[in-house]
Amino acid sequence: MKHKILITEDDAVTALYMKQTAQSLGYEVIKIATEAEEAIELSKNEQPDLVLMDISLPGDIDGIKAADIIIEQNGIPVIYVTGNSDNETMQRAISSNTYGYILKPVRKEQMYTMVEMTLHRHKLEKELIKRENQLKELNEQLEEKVADRTRKLSVNNQRLEQEVERRKAIEEDLKESLAKEKELGELKSRIVTIISHELKTPLTTILSSAQLIDFHADNKAPSEKIQKHTHSIQRNVQALTELVNDTLFISRADAGKIELEKAETNVIEYIEELIDHLKDGLGNGYNFNIKKLNDIPEELMIDTRLLKQILNNLLTNAIKYSPESQDIDIKVGYINSELSIEVKDHGIGIPQKDVKLLFQMFHRASNVENIEGTGIGLAIVKKCLDFMDGQINIDSKVGEGSSFTIYFKAQKPDDE
Image 1 (cartoon, one colour):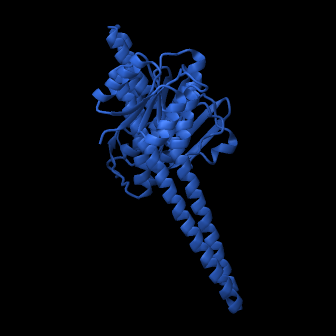
Image 2 (tube, rainbow, N blue to C red):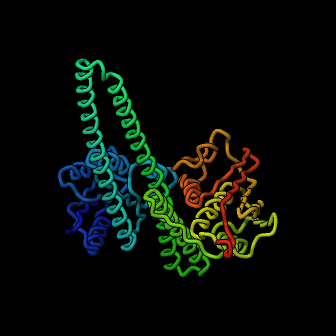
Image 3 (cartoon, rainbow, N blue to C red):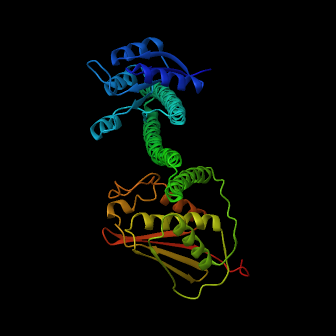
């Protein structure tokens, strides 16, 4: 089925070109509006799947205001098509509820990319709203059942005084269930908010980089300019992959599907390899100092999958919350078959009130508002250590840095 598009453009030549371009991409152009009021009316009556909206339109309201009305009243996604890129107009466009914009002259590839991404995003948002409504309906049904149960308990209480204490206990259980249900709803809301933001930011960067690659390629720019944006795409795809992997790991851990798989490992070499990998990504401007506190056996029996999850998150946090060129110290010790690894940075530190909450899913310290993150990393660290029967200690001061030290049993191959 073809997607239906409404074009709003007061220039007849541009409108005709946009129509022909959209049709060549397989879309159905149902109407062409020349004024904002006409676009609003046609959106209501024709119910297109998407509106391409010119910002500068004749009449009392412009395209930005018309887009807000169409989105609010009809729930139809709108993409701006404009040749006006002055700062004030772009700020208004960015602040509105639109799904994006295309600069004139319109290019076929750009139209296709923006339209398909917008339609896909709108579909996902509709599905999310549907699921939220289903959850709300289920919650209402649960509340009705709880209310009904409470009424029956009250009647029985009047008849059977000897069961008062038992009924009170049941009532407390019900209240606890409601509190847990509310907590679960809030957690789901936080998950949606955080994951949506963490997905939106790299996706926006990927789209922007792809558009700039097209631009540089069309203008035969030097390969260095194009490589800059391909590297940006690679970094953001890697970030999305890590987010998905973290989410899958949490899911598997909660389902109890993680089993220890120990293998002979040279701990120092393994840490060095992890650091080299991080340097290739985002930590090239930092000084990593590895120090052995005593003699470390050349080989130890360790589950390197879990150790990688732990160290990747601790080292990434040390990088993320420290200014460049700072030292990040890693100290490794081994006493009585117990391995200890400390990761210490000299960054922003953690407020004391947040320390005891750091291992909760999606909790982030109160002083990291401007630094991106999901709050999943340390929860993963704690789950990995639980599987390894390990522990973690935190020592941190605001403005002076943080130290995370993990402890877990690591036998020599012969002892194992």
